Length: 295
Image (cartoon, rainbow, N blue to C red; front, side, top):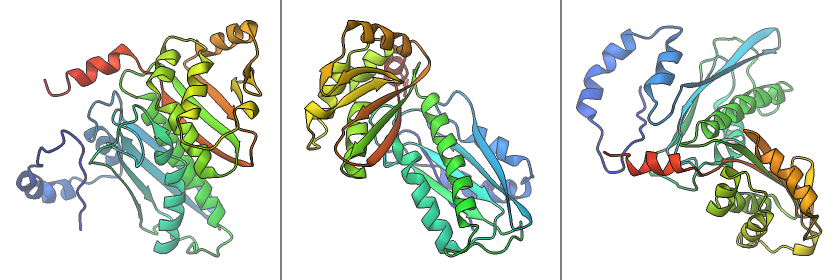
């Protein structure tokens, strides 16, 4: 059994005959350390391979979860122009594995955006062979939470690596929306901010232009109460109850924007649900890369 996966120029057909002809050779070439070669083989505009592995003891057996991924542009849920393959030697029933995998995807690959662009080509796959010989994990196992945390940790790290390697990116930004009425609303607000070109260019320019963030929140379509909104860059609050906190706070926040990584916290003060999205700035290099993609 084999599965095909691809990204690349939309509409360009894969050379299936060549691929099929070489499958036996690929099978013969399988090695324990082949994961590193696979991680490099799937790259396109990525600048480096993305590999993560973690170990945990379940019962008296050590299990491993290892993952590889590719992606650097056209990244926004549902996943988009990215591939990820997760492998584990854990013994776990298929239904339970599928459930925890989908849960993990929601807070990882479906919670990132580099440029707000979706694609026709994306997938994430998880495979388990049971070689660890641990007691089989089911939906009722006490060890399920250990496995879930291990899997989610790998997925989140891989998705973060994709964003950090974003085409032309100079900033890695976490947009955290807290105290929303519902998770769905929090996620819509987070993505609206993360995908705003004006917000992203302000990040690139290290400009604490919180007005653009307020505008993106309003454009999300979520029913909000502006007079309740607080906005902070890390722990520097620049908006309190919908009103700016002054030039001194903005100057302090601008220093936060000079970092390669930082967090923007948007407090809607309307509930108890939270959502997080990883994103980037938008630089001239992104335009250059995509203007010359096929030339």
